Length: 73
Image (cartoon, rainbow, N blue to C red; front, side, top):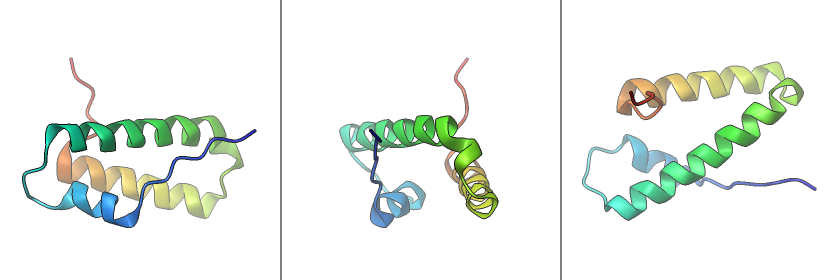
């Protein structure tokens, strides 16, 4: 059995667009991103190196643009 989380390209673009969004929409995107991160972490060794590199680039860009990945505390 496999889990699948779908984040559309438009949802990814929304993260990088400087505009006001509802808190509930942001929370929904954050939940999807977290679920996707858990799946990626669990399957990291099975992901091809090229895809791993793209995921690293995406995560870095997300952090730089939004601070989205920063741990609170």
